[in-house]
Amino acid sequence: MSPKRGWAGWSFRMQRWLGLFLILAAVGFAQGSGWLKIEEDVAAEVAKPQVTVVHFWAPWCPNSRAELADAGWSTFIDSNWDVKFVFVTMWSGEDGAAMLRESGIAERGNFVAWRHPAASRKKGERTEVFMDLPVTWLPTTWVFRDGKLRYAFNYGEVRFAMLQQAVRDAAETWER
Image 1 (cartoon, one colour):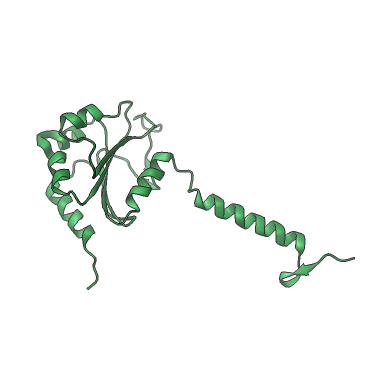
Image 2: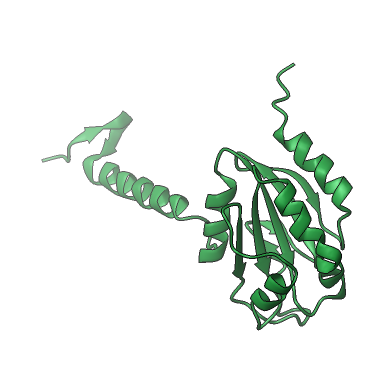
């Protein structure tokens, strides 16, 4: 007795295996590409229908400290209440919460701060990819809208006037 055939001559058993493979592949794809929970959490924030600024920093980093001085970030966050801000402490064993509080930045409706679990800042050990995007220097600042990266400042301090322009541009609908 010959096996049942369908799909242009594929046996029923081959069809079942192919179906199982496709289901498993879809489940694997839906679970991401091996991202850490913090990457999934940030991706969920940037996917919302809003402009989101993701800022990677470290308490030990002189450039990160310079951005916090003179109420720089605090003023910027307060001036952009309709923008979501996600600070991610990278390459540091401490979360930097005390430094953020001292700088006038505290948990509020448009701000969250998380610490990346990989604390090493040694070359070869430190995390240099986040959500499949490069983070090779601190501070790094990204601007997203509706889950799409609109601007990336990947090398050192960002000037707030430049960041404000990027936020304004990201908010534009570009339907002209």
